[in-house]
Length: 81
Image 1 (cartoon, rainbow, N blue to C red):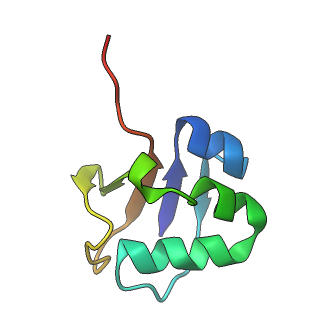
Image 2: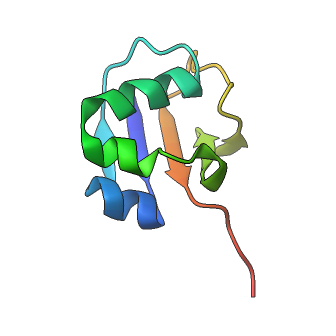
């Protein structure tokens, strides 16, 4: 599964993209796995209310299932101006 990181999420993790193998069944479980990897992931995912997630380029929720998903993207909420 491809994991994409955007904006400050990418800056905190230090990667724009990575390919991982996971047994997670939901986005929340995936985040839990990532947070357990290293402190930089813990920092990036410390406040999920400050993050949005897209599954295969469709905006989704953290309780969404990952069955059949090829790409997960994490990014801060979009703001306009």
